[in-house]
Image 1 (tube, rainbow, N blue to C red):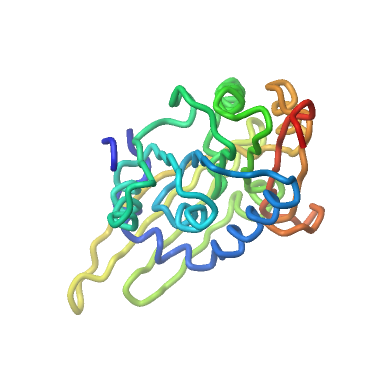
Image 2 (cartoon, rainbow, N blue to C red):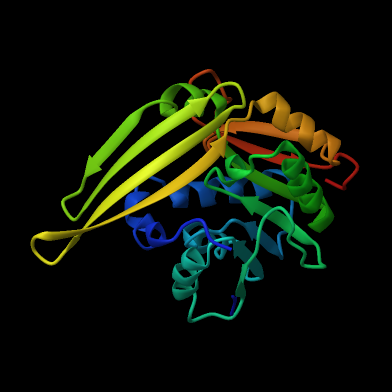
Amino acid sequence: MIHILNTYEKFAFIYDELIDDIDYEKWGNFINKIILDHGKKVKSILEIACGTGKLTLQLSKICQEIDAFDISADMLSIAYNKFQDNDYVNFYNLDMVDFDFNKEYDLIICGCDSINYILDTDDLDKVFSNVRKHLKDDGLFIFDINSYEKIANMIGNNIFYEDRGDIFYLWDSSFDKNNDICDYFLTFFILKGNSSYEKFQENHTQRAYKTDFICEKLVNNGFDRVYMYDDYTFKQIDKDTQRVTFVASISNAKE
């Protein structure tokens, strides 16, 4: 079921095609291994910022009670189409800063650098506090971010483009090191028919977070076991890490 806020609009309908470099099966396997290593039994999952549901598909292999939400109704419409034949995944149109389900979960997930879209550090506190409120005492919170180095030095103040024949896009980035904010200006040309293209533009903004700051915020909101990994692998992060995956839990919980 879907319960119909919006950042991704037309981009939502080509999103899956453009992120074909992300190995969601690898992500799912990593998450399942983390669950096993921590000796957890996962009977309920909350997925924050689920997008088009590609990670949700992997999570559905882990358990069959999933609530998932996103701020973009367009992204949700695509996710919902992936789950029309089941009744154990519920989709909601909500903001990650102030969601409320009035229940607790064994596992809470937030993938695809969605945390970087939280621009205000007070809002980041609200997100982590809300996650803690919705997480069972022996639960796990797993999320990832684009590393500070990736946003500041690789993406920031650079221009990227790709021509896929039916889709051409230009990505112009501007990083403000005074407030760690990076603006992405995206221009798309989508082939319509044999010779005409539809043009549309979207602007996105992310904040670059350092891992120490994220860890401090997690501890301040009740998480005192925090592990960091390099991009859904069990490698330790280093200066070249582009995606940092966090696994957070509470030490007084039963292992």
